[in-house]
Length: 327
Ligand SMILES: Cc1cc2nc3c(=O)[nH]c(=O)nc-3n(C[C@H](O)[C@H](O)[C@H](O)COP(=O)(O)OP(=O)(O)OC[C@H]3O[C@@H](n4cnc5c(N)ncnc54)[C@H](O)[C@@H]3O)c2cc1C
Image 1 (tube, rainbow, N blue to C red):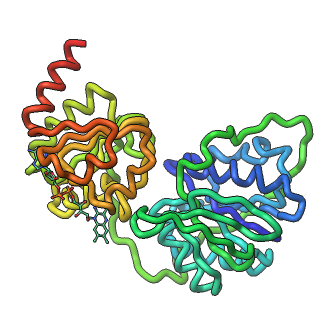
Image 2 (cartoon, rainbow, N blue to C red):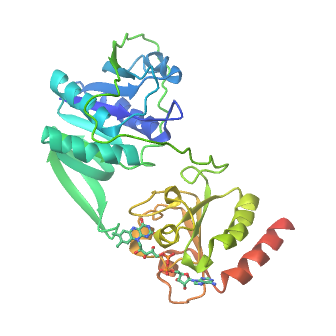
């Protein structure tokens, strides 16, 4: 059984969910029937990856060299993964859940005629089969399925394999072979990138903040976000929004939480002026605690909340800020 794991990077470092994929890889390597291959873009931060994984039974690491710093087209990465599949006779391709991989995976599965399974939230392997859970219908239902580990592209949800440290101290040095693949920008691209705008780096990123404030249409206009920013600064919280807020153009797309946005797992989610539509809940269901503020006592969000405050956010939040400032 040959398994290829694609490790994505953020700002030239392995992203947190790629480290989670390494946790999965470390478990898979314990099974002698699995040949594990890793593939990632090359960056300085990964030059020690081979040593970090030195007692793992990894067959080979492939680094994609992007010397001229071209924009990385998802379709081009798909071509590279497809040719690795062919050369190595890969049965299963595993990726993490980000917009980049969500772009690659369906395309790749079509191209290879592999089945595509997104949103896997837990799994185990038995007798060359994968038995997995995945949330469907906007998290209203949990599908339990079994597939043969053959001809599959799988996407694992983030925040499910966090617990183990992926760097394991080793006694034994196992020399993992490395291959370099050159990234060329100028062939087989379906579209051309004309311009790139870097998004503002947040002090408290939505994906990793322990406290996240989710804001809905009840905020009424973009200027009122100042109130939310004040609260977020005091709490050290990240800010996310509903699709309505994005559709109104009040906040950028990358702050959207939910089925078509980000899936987060903070310790505390503070839902302000949002109704709790199932597509939004899909992104916050895994929060440890939910506190909500809504002026409609029948708002759906209260069904999911540990604590609910019925009232006008424009009265409650200034009071909350004053209280927190006096703590
Ligand atoms: C295919 C599909 C995918 C979707 N994906 C997503 C997704 O990924 N993420 C997402 O968020 N949505 C998604 N949606 C949209 C979703 O169905 C809802 O329409 C959206 O989440 C509602 O946003 P909202 O809660 O901000 O607005 P509303 O539903 O209009 O709720 C506003 C809330 O604010 C409260 N409120 C108003 N004024 C105040 C005040 N002064 N004080 C306190 N409370 C107040 C109201 O009582 C109300 O509950 C999707 C929809 C579809 C069909």
